[in-house]
Structures are given as C-alpha cells and as structure tokens.
Image 1 (cartoon, rainbow, N blue to C red):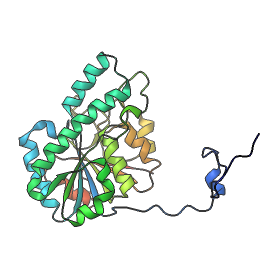
Image 2 (cartoon, one colour):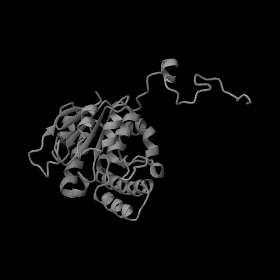
Image 3 (tube, rainbow, N blue to C red):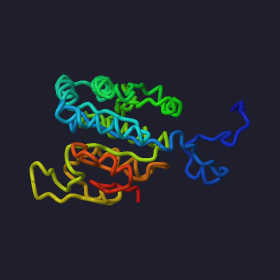
Image 4 (cartoon, rainbow, N blue to C red):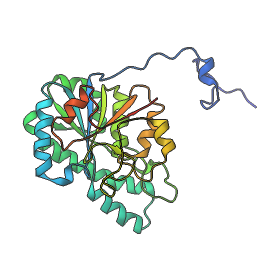
Length: 270
C-alpha cells in the first residue's frame, strides 16, 4: 500500500471516529460564545401565531418593548399549516427529507409576518446565513426574527416509520442558542409548561416545574409540549445547559424567564 500524503496537524492520520481520540489530543480550547448576551425566544405557530391578532398583537408589543432593554432573537414555528402539509405529504408517501423542506417554507412565512408585526421596534427578518452577523445587527438596534426549522432539508435524519422530521422548530431554536452561546433559550407555548399528561385532555395533569434531561427521557412520556430531540441534544450541549418552557400568552412571562424566574418548566442538562 502506498503512503498517503498528509498535512501536519494534531489530527494527522485520524479517522475522526476513533474512540478515545480526544483524550489523547491536546486540551481543546474553550468554545467562543458569539452572542453571549442574547436571549432566544421561540414563538410557536401552533402555540401562538395561529391564534391571530388576539394573541400576537399584545405578544409582539411585549417583545418589542422588552427588546429596548434586552438583546433578543425571535424564532418562529410553523403551526397548523405545517401539520396540514405533513399530513398530505405522508399520505402521498413523501420521504422525511422532503417533508422537512416543505415544512420549512411555512415557518419562514411566519417569520416574515412576525417581523412585520415587530417592524416599529426594528423587527427584521433574517436568514440562517445571517446568524454570524448578529453581533453587528444587535449593535445597529435591529430586533432579528428568524424561522426555526433547522437547515437539514433533504438531509434531515431518517425518521424510521414515523415520517415526521425529528428536527423541527423547537430543535432549531435550541441549536441556534447553542451555536451562538446565548444567554438563554426560552420556548413559548400555549400552556403553562411541561405536563406529565396533556392538560387539555386531563385538567388534573401534573405540571413538571423542574427536571433533568435524563429524568425526562426515563419518564418516556406519551406526549410532550416540547420536541423530544431538544431533550436529547440538551444532554451534550456545551453552552445551553437548560431550556425554559413558558406560557407566552401570559404577559410578563418572557421577561420573568429572562431574569431567571421559573414561570413554567425548566429542563436542565444535569
């Protein structure tokens, strides 16, 4: 076998999958936090936007006023239209990656609408390619709004027989927060937090106020208000070590969550 041409580096000749590789490599430098002061606020389509002006006008007013005191990035979900397109797509036999492509278009539409609702507060729709420009955009006084669907698209992870893409907008908000090294990741919903059961079906369902990712995975809940992928990713995150779920229909909850108050559910990495 001929010798391979190599470039001198600390990973010279490595397969990048060898177990224990990083134990033998020199200590990794601490990861840079690109926007350590920013708060990621996820506004779901199903949980907020689909309610229309009755919920969204006061919510956007609250976010706009809060943006004068705090650095925010608003992340939008898709909502009912995503469920509609996925239902049709799965009935037609569309692959998971195609469903991811289709659903992304809808959360993008919601980002456009939310940015317009926030326009008097300098709300501006940005794209995933603009995320590294956030430090500059924030200094310019812009309130950025981005859609939450991660850009896997056709490369979305296979979902076995379930079909529904596992990386959706809650996951996208979390991944944005992690790569930016954000101050917080807050997921706005239409319920008071994470329940052991669906509170709309069981009014006596237990509200889980504080839980670790491992504990939540062990519970193996039938249904959750949060995408399961977020819980899995949280275990290995470097910067985001907790996710907060709040009821964004209740005015003041976002600011309280930013200030560290538990007004819903906190899911911790450990």
